[in-house]
Length: 103
Image (cartoon, rainbow, N blue to C red):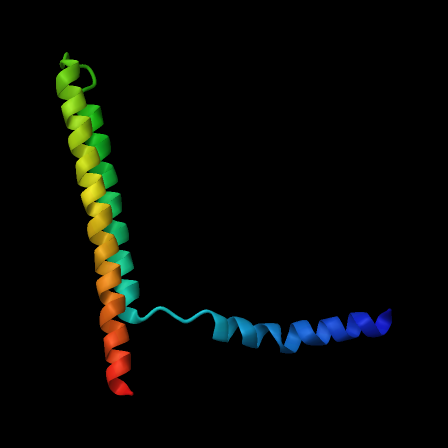
């Protein structure tokens, strides 16, 4: 039993750290910057969305206008999500092309 525990400890100390380093590629600096920019863009959109919703408070606005504003925000959110997804994919494609050209 004691040998089994020692073997498991040795495996976890020596093998697992090297597996995690090789298993998870690090993000490039460019990708990290892009993700940070996208995160800020999402935060700004969230703030704008909150302000738009709060602008109706205390005022009498027809439900048609509320629905129109809500749907507009939904369209903008979908467009932003799609644009960000495309930006990440374009970056990965560029990186893949550069990696292939080095070979």
